Each structure stands twice: as C-alpha cells, then as structure tokens.
Length: 123
Length: 123
Image 1: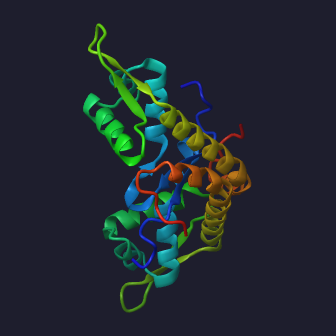
Image 2: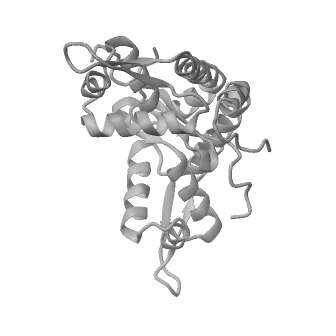
Image 3: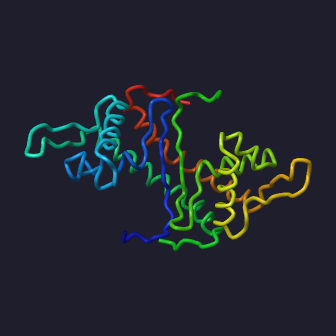
C-alpha cells in the first residue's frame, strides 16, 4: 500500500496455447509459497481461498514437466509446501521477462501516459 | 482460427494506477471500430454485448485527454463511430509496446516453454 498509487506498470501473461499460461497470479503465489512454506498462507496473503490456491498449484504442476510446488508432509499443521528448483526457475524467468519487457516498453508506456487526462506520476 | 493453436504469446495490460488501463480488449475494440465504423459491429466481432462495448468506449474516452472514439451521427443505421487521431495513436503505441516487449521477452518465453510438459511449437 506504500507503492506510488499511480505509477504505470505492465501486467504480463504468457499464453502457451493449449498448454496453459503463466502470469502475475501464479508468480505471486509461487513467491508466497517460497516465503511462507504454505500454500494456504500464500493464498491467504493474496486474498485467495485455499481451494483456489490449491487449484492454481495443481494447474502449474500439471503444466510443467516437473512439479513447481511439492507438499512437505508432517509437521504440526499437517505439512507445508516448498517451491522446487523448476518452480524457482519458472519464477525467475517470468520475473526476468517482466523486467525485460518493462524496459523495452517504457518509452511506449510513457507516450501513452502523456495522453492521459490525469497523467500518473513518473516513478 | 488459422493461427497456430499453441504458439506462445504475451498478453500485456498497461496499468496506469487509478487512471485506468489499456490492454488487449480495448486495443482489439479500437481496431474493430476502425475496421467496421461501428461500435456494435466491433463488439459483436469480439463476442461482446453492445452494452459492454459501449462501456469500454466510454471508459477509454474518459481516460484520455481527447476521446479515442467519436460517434458519427446520422446514416441509415443510426450513425456509426470512428477512431480519432488520438485513438489511432493509442492503438499504435500499444501495438508497438507489444512488439517491443515480445521481442525483449522472447528468450525468457522460450526458456519457460522448454520446461512445459507439452512444449508448444515454435513459430
């Protein structure tokens, strides 16, 4: 909530035809699972139901040759979850794509912004 | 429908904070209006209700300092619509952004794709 409220940003979804897609929601969920060690907690941080978070994890695990998230059984709260090396790679490639696309697109974004009625502040 | 069914592509939304957003739907609608001269026809081509197409046009017209679409009154079917020079500029900048981001991101997309269970064909 401390981000500048109106700095422009790109929201990028990579669509692999029938093979599925990777976008901001899956990336944020992977990051949350890596941070919290829990699918439920990661989903909660995103205002997402446990069921929805689980569905996203299953979708991601089914898309790739290796699972991106593994459940770690046992423990006081019925076990947690961890992001696999493949999951870390997918997340890193997506974040690098975001950064590269944002850099390449910044001049176009600036020109679009200059046409707005209420131009957002530069960051 | 003749596109390769599974070639990866980027879907990019530019989010201008509280000032609104520009993405594939608005771009496609602008293109449709330019092509058909009609908001209704452009929306129909996208499987969109007339109401929804009009709402999108009003949102776009409110976002920018100049309207992107103008109604042209009169004519046999109650008048059409045209994309203004500002609308053409917005569309061109968005398409150029897409192209630049796609080019900058292609190596990352390729690496993500190589991790898929069913890699989509290269195009």
